[in-house]
Figure 1 (cartoon, helix red, strand yellow):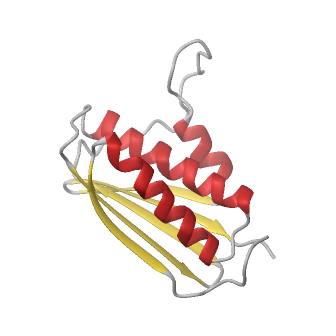
Figure 2: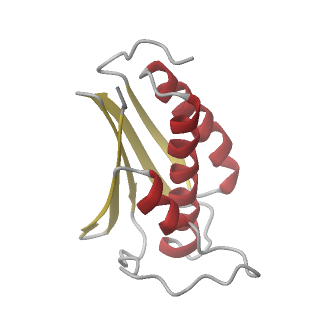
Figure 3: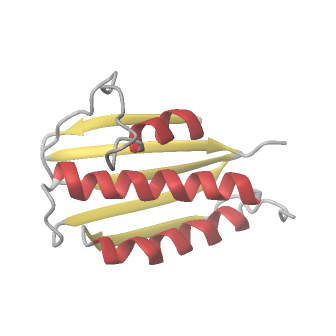
Length: 140
């Protein structure tokens, strides 16, 4: 059962690209989403998409380096949870139409998750990296 939404909730995190940082980020985002009134299914989608995005930052933007900076900001206002993920990596845009996924090989589901489970996912190239903005609306 979800609780009454608390507008103005926010979260700011600075982590490194080490995969060991993913579990604490997931927990904090799930707690924030719960405080904002998101139900269990929506919280799972938010956490999954954020986890996939952070994994892709490490893998693609930083070429597997585990000591690079990532900033995560999440805020809830006007019924929308907005999560931004900022990196200072390669700055390459992901393909608009990813190649068909081979189910026998790992990977390839991050972009599918972002496009299917979030209400909005947009990449904003920066002069020195990338900003990903994810949005999920609270259903009535």
